Length: 145
Image (cartoon, rainbow, N blue to C red; front, side, top):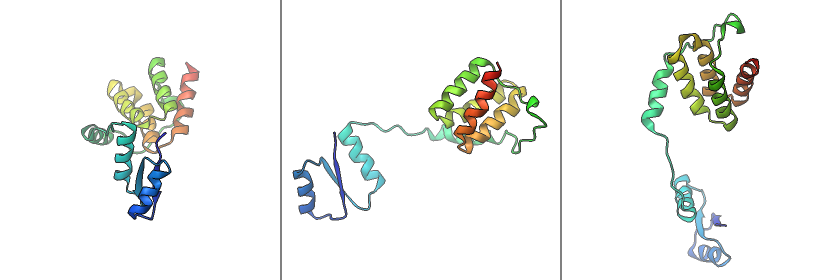
């Protein structure tokens, strides 16, 4: 177990006392996120993986192709994707992976324009961080198959 002492007292004496009682490292308050992440990386042997900025920009650009408002006359106009695709989406939703859900919804619309209402609604939920509503939405269609 790694212990990092955090204190507003930044004198060398305080840092030495922290190390004497078993702390592996010391951070002064207020905590700076970058410093904390660096300490965690060093002590836990982590390698941080950052989002691909080009991929994020691409998703934002493709978002414009979606209908901004959801003008469905009824739930009957929403055609869900295949059972295998629903299973993948449901798995992503259970993991809380809203970014991948948004990406897949963009792909669904490209695959078949009949899926556009389903994909657009799913995309809006993902971008609104509506994880619970996504689960309910997907389970409704998954249960109907």
